[in-house]
Amino acid sequence: MKSKIFLQLITAVFMLFAFDVRAKTSPVDEAEAASWAQNTGHELIDALGNPDLQSKYDTLDKMFNEDVDTSYIAKFVIGKYWKIFDAEQKQAYLTLFNRYVLSLYKNYPLDFNTDGIDFEITSARINGNFTDIFCKVNLPENMASENLSYIMLEFKVAKTDGKIKIYDLKIGESSLILTYRNRFYTMMTEADEEVSWFLEDLETLTVSNEQNAQQKLLYQ
View 1 (cartoon, rainbow, N blue to C red):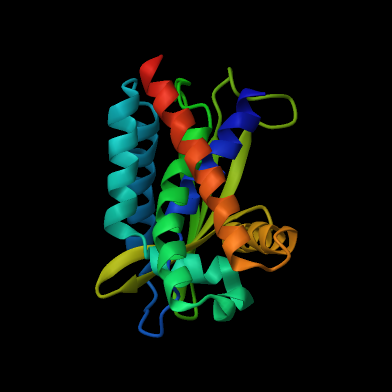
View 2 (tube, one colour):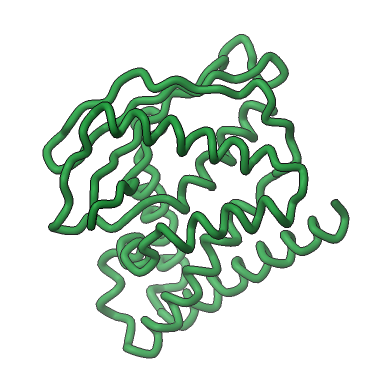
């Protein structure tokens, strides 16, 4: 159960770090990519292991706000429906999406101990304009099970304006960004492709997540 919760949390957190695939990207040297992934991974584990919940929120939010191209992600996950939003709805959606992704990871249990969680970079290779980084996350005994003792992750990274950014995360064969596009498409279908209804549903979901996060702060 603990390993399942950790896997869900990793999925939610890394939703924050998926970026715009722009034309001006360049692959990262394999050694540089591996070193960057090693350092960033440890920073993330340290943030998740912080016992002070508000400080944990602040650190993860800061990483998101400094590095994530929210506008692109919002447009990507809504896909073909973007063209039916009017100008006012587009602005409302972009603002709401930013709140949604910040509230998302806070809806998972964040009070577990990360001691013993470690990872290794198994390989990194250039793939066109990107570099693929393969990582093995080793779970400690209290999280591991007979069927799950480690998690394999694949990051797609590139340099934009001289800065390394993550463009996608795969767990097994599942692309995180495509998973969230499927989720938003489902929400649009359930709203009968009515943008105002979709925005109301997204607002309700976001507010619920934000309220849960505030409750956790009150009772930590």
